[in-house]
Length: 175
Image (tube, rainbow, N blue to C red; front, side, top):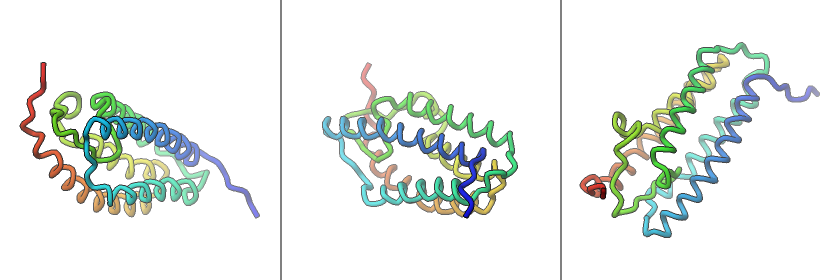
């Protein structure tokens, strides 16, 4: 029996997994703090589906993409740019960034950074990433399957998040 071969796809997946775990630590800390300040979580029921989807995506990439898959370097470069975008969103949201939908009724919505142009910039990053990583290694079927699953889940989540944020659209930022 041959052992698992490691190549660029597996290295990228391991780096993404480490990144996600570090982000979850920050997100969980921010979630606890927001809840302690009177925030409330909305859409708790669908959150585990994102955990399953993203875990399955990483596992599929790790185990199904051959270690010697050809690398499409422009898509790897795009992946790096997407990470810059992700951290721009995280930095812009600061203590309000979390992987859950937590709304703090008295807090104004963030209008700076990428939120000046896009209502849900992190979701844009995730959509591009879910397609770009498999495509960077020629795994178009994985890109298609996970992009469809993600689109269905995100469509629901965005509706839930928009409904939760609607009452805060009129909250004026304090100087």
